[in-house]
Image 1 (cartoon, helix red, strand yellow):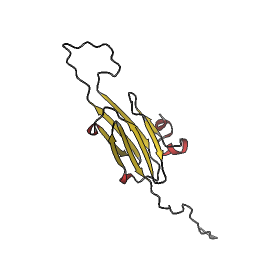
Image 2 (tube, rainbow, N blue to C red):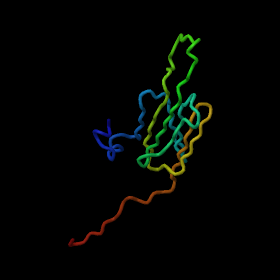
Image 3 (tube, rainbow, N blue to C red):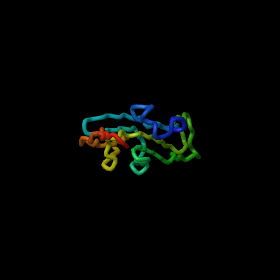
Image 4 (cartoon, rainbow, N blue to C red):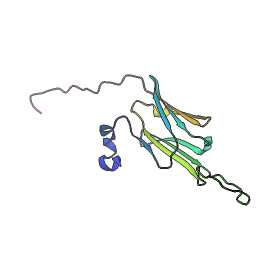
Length: 141
């Protein structure tokens, strides 16, 4: 909704820290840790295999995590359902995180183990040149 009101270029002006978006049906809980050398994201992805998860960078610095799993199939002939809380439809989630500008997007790594997806986004620790630039003043333009 913020994109439609304020537009993409003004996101950081109105919201800080960066935007985190989650779509309905998502069960992917997220922890975001920052160390001196990296941003670390830990996302719960229970029951998802490595090939059912996609991690990508879009729009320059938006980290997108998508999980798409197959629905569980049961032999309906002799099956009696007592409780259905996990659902029988195709399961999935989607999260988007606008990364800070100091992240080296070309060096991001992801690893999944025991139902937790860990994404490490290294920071660019080299000092940035000053954005202040002196302008010479003359008597005539």
